[in-house]
Length: 246
Length: 333
Figure 1 (cartoon, rainbow over the protein chains, first blue to last red):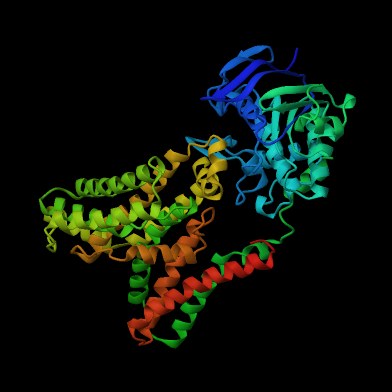
Figure 2: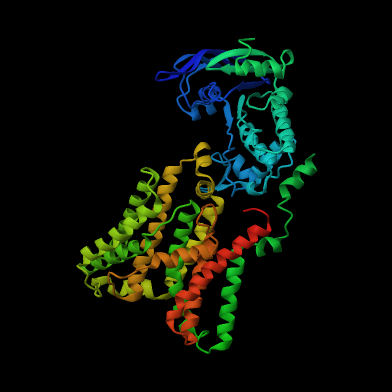
């Protein structure tokens, strides 16, 4: 059974048709590369999955259960975690505090709940080890490299046992070395049975981690195929419209 | 694997305890205050007298109490200019209610509620209507003082009915040899020191100051936390108002005028960053202490009080300049 299944998803904003009749399936532990030019509907599709937008039409299922997200919190409860492009981290807090932000562990002494730093450092440390990242739980985020920041954002997603992690352009603004680090993080997620949707402009990144690639053009799905059976040239053609469909 | 995990957890930026302590602005401000005290003890025979120390500690307690509230506001990236007006509102309500013959406890409660009302208005307009904190609290600064004038008809109140002596004792007296306002400040600093570091609320306050957008996305109830912060700041001003009437033994409508600037200065000297995300309760009282020691030393050394502003202002710039240099050295901006 697919983890995420979308059938006939459409979204229009007034007269503008942002998505029309998009259908796709994502299996557990699969990495899906979502590609398309600016304005092709990538972010609209991402926002539908993340619960920011309600689709105008179509059915979305997670783990076989039909879902209708009214707000991002609904999506999170259903097991969809988003790693935002800006990562949404608090630079002034430690890695562990960021991982647990909004769901801090507490220990009660009488009626008062104290933050359980020891437990949070330990759990965050375990997550970073799981991600094979050198990020340290006690370090402040503002002292971290782009790759370590990504690890913190991804550890946030792992903490809740997310089924689907949606990553919005994670490699857009970081150095080549850090890109390798981030791609490794994505592989770790996959190995842990988490499905990843990778939105990216960078063809080599997508081809190095994605099992499946879908291409959107003017709100329509024009390709949905295994990465091993495609090539960067073909995908470029599909994105620009030089190739009609595949 | 487990050893590397343990190491990773134990590890904290390759710093010894000593370098972590000396890396804090608060440490140097504290040392400056201590140095000033030592120098004054040697240079004058008036500083280390019981009477002078009693005055110094009591004076700085009023600024210290509010600067703890101000630190919380600044930690969220906000500012509260209305604290001086909350002080006079609280003091005026105390005075009027007591002068009308009601007991101290009732007057105190009403006074605190009046201050909290100002904080609630600030908080709601800032968090829910999304108005800039500077503008909102500038407005309530003006409104608060004006209402205090209306309430009192701009007359001085110096007779406080049946609980007159109790009020003067609470604000101006001492317990175990320490001025009562100082004890209130120490208790508040202790509670808030724990709250900032060890409560979810404290964590959320600093998260909002660090990245409000991220805090919202993480599901933190940003708006209620912000309202609570402005109400807390007003609460500290309200407590100060009640204590200050008792200390002065009389109240006029210019009480707490320009106090917000001293309080903000204390918070900033104590390590609160106006951009949000940093500050401690301990830093707030150390900042307040330094300002009061400077003020007191100028008087004792016979330097014209006209110089006070120049000295306090220089310390604000020095303290923040030190922070900049430290950041620059550590390679971040």
